[in-house]
Every structure is written in C-alpha cells, then in structure tokens.
Amino acid sequence: MSRPIIAIGGTYGQAPPTSAFPTLRRIFTNEGYVSKLEQSGASVILIPNTETNIDTLISLCDGLLLPGGPDIEPSLYHQERHPSCGKSDVESDTFQIALYHAAKKLGKPIMGICRGCQLINVAEGGTLFQDYMMRENHLIDHPDLAHFDKVSHLVTIQENTRLASILGSGEVGVNSLHHQCIDVLAPDFQCMARSNDGCIEAIECTTGHWVLAVQWHPESMDEGMLPLFKAFVEEARKRLSPV
Image 1 (cartoon, one colour):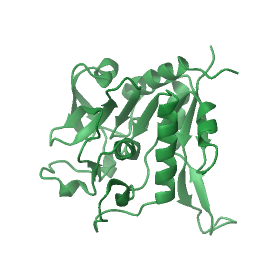
Image 2 (tube, one colour):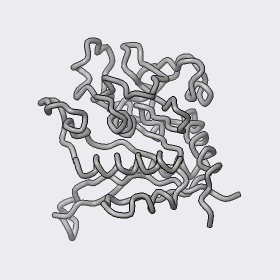
Image 3 (tube, one colour):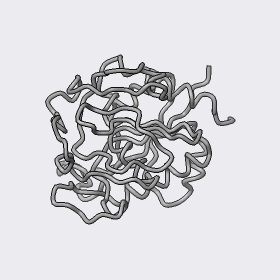
Image 4 (spheres, one colour):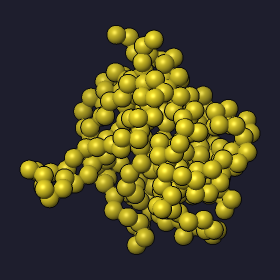
C-alpha cells in the first residue's frame, strides 16, 4: 500500500554556539511528529521556509501538519504586543499561514498541533489570548511542563464532531505545553473540545474541508493519541498524489 506524504511546516531555531555556523538559523521539527506519522503509515517531509513555489511544494504532498512552536506575531490578529507574549518569528508565521492556505485551496487534509491550532485560527480571522492568564477563568496550569508526556488535565470532547468520531466523546486526558490560547474563534470553525475552565482545546472547519487542530501535543503522549494521526493519514491516503 502506498504511503501518503505528509508535509510538516519547518520552524526556525538558532544554531547552538558550538555549531560551525553559530550565526545561522536552522529549520527543524520535533521527532515526535515524524514518529507518530510514520507509525500511522505516512512518509514525512519537512518543508523549509520559502517565499517561492509554495503551491508547487504543497501539490507534491498529500497532507499538511502545522506543528508547535513560538508565539504568533500579534499584529497578524490585529493586536498590540502584550508584555507576556513571547518572542515571535513573523517570517515563519507568514510562511506557515501561506502553507495553510495553499493546502486548503488544493483540498489537502490539514492537522494543527498547539501553535498550529492557534495559527489556523489566526489564518482564518480568529484571535488569541496572548497569555492564558489574560482569560477571565484560568484554573489550570498552562503550560504544565513537568507533565509534557502525560496527562495534565481533562478536556471534554463534544458529540457529533470529527474529534468525537476519532477519540470518542466525553472526557479525555491531555498534556499542556501552551501559554497562549484561542480567544475569538474563526468564522466557519467550531470548537470540538474544551477544558473545564472553558479554554478551547480543539477546533475543526465546518465548510467541508478536512481541517482538524488540537491545543495539546498528542505526539508527546502514549498510544492512546495515535488514532488522531491515523485518521489524518488515512484522509491523506484518499488524496494520494499521482507518481
């Protein structure tokens, strides 16, 4: 059986001082994304930041994963930067937003994780809380770095959503590595899951496009989260690019 090709949008990171090129940035992704996607039957490529041929690059792939990363530039959702907002990389932000729109235009399935979830919301006209503590209710530790690979809190998955068809409705344990979260949800999207403080934890597109995004990091958790990746890969398999 052919393996669909999943593209991951690359994230810039500064090379370490010990590098032969310490002043240059590196484009990387975390191995957890690759591992879970490969376990689910996909082949994976990392797309570097580029301003050219984005449509061509996406056309060579069968699905797009937008991963975690730094805080999104607030001006992209029409806000002034708050002191609690972390460092942003507007070049990566605009590149990954362009990747998202290109993939959606071509009908490719799209999965967002943590920052990727927030990025999709921003790309579609939604806004963010620049820090979780800016919400009226902040009863959960976001982020809970001590439990990066295990359950930190519960979310409630709503019935009759794509996420419910994958993981089941009701309560599911998730980790938490984010300090920002969705404020105003983008048009044509719906919330699929919330934490018990009301924070939006998962969203999906309601216009027929296969776009699913979660606020937690399923790639860092156990096999209980593998069905998320399998559902994404199977959807990509339906759109295998011609060889």
